[in-house]
Picture 1 (cartoon, rainbow, N blue to C red):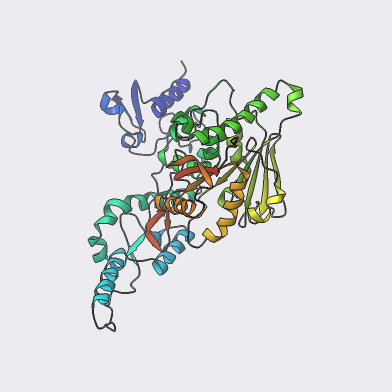
Picture 2: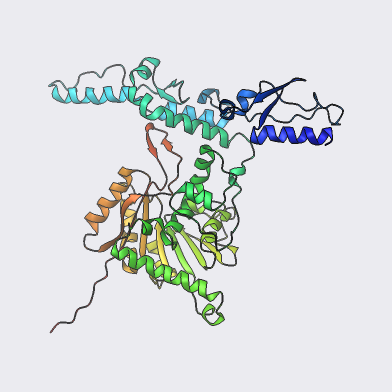
Length: 467
């Protein structure tokens, strides 16, 4: 074996397999480590103590003496927001300091307001801590969380329940803006139909769909943030839906989803039957109140199509904030011959007749984090919900937190009592985003896109014969 072949094989063995021996090259010095269980568990970074270079050891073999190989990947970057090298993150820290709230001050003010209400003299001056802003940056997470180091030390809730999540958000945001190549966003293409995808959760989905570039929890968080929308849709309508496997659908839900899956089966049979192919209609998926989900790269929705590749799918994004990108004048995008995206800017109940008639066998509705029960938006949603119930088609909605979903459920129960049937009782969504987004004005409040999911449909009344 030539020396060059030996060198390349030894280095490849060192970088990837770490055995049967570990070769550590460090500036013209070679050290051999026996492959004991201890060294098997060592990270490469703990073994390499200097930048590895073949030129120092095999200078006569390689012509390019400046080539360095075996560089250790950089650890995730962590900065205090005010010291971040990224200007947008520095500005974000300033906004939090200006509009945020110190948790300890907030608690003291709440206690003070209770005490004032019990006093006869309502003109008592408030204490000096009122109005203080979070200017002290927590060394654990990098965010400006408190007005002073003293209040930061007093806040045990922040240290135990919030700090670690804020630190993760800090590292993730710096990583996304670092300029590094993002291989995790290189999604797989279609796969052989005999390979079944497991839709139990993110882990089984990524594994059975061959997402080979996802190799860390950080990569999973990045990807789940955008794939939560198409894969949540797939988890409802797919023949191997995780909600069907867990028997989470109600009897009415089984009927509605069964109707959609019947059409999907017809699409599959139509590939080998020309007569049937001329008769089928596409599945129409309506995404109401569309915002960020309508602005994703259109190729993201190919991941939905790859899960049901025999189907004809048209996705309608409808909402006042629905803006197709990059050309606002364009409202139809043909992603492939079997997948079309359409954009309609406005309220669904105002343009209802543009989509009618509706058929439970081909039409299904999704509302991602709609805020149906939020005080500021519920009045705008009420006429839309009324029209949706009249279609008798399946309607599925998500919530970004437990309280958000609770507000939605309360509105449905209070405003539309006896007008709808449950298809899917409120339940955690296995394909929610794994990234937490924190409120600028209060870092104690966070949201997780599509965290929970529920489904309903306008009530169907059975006709009975009477004498």
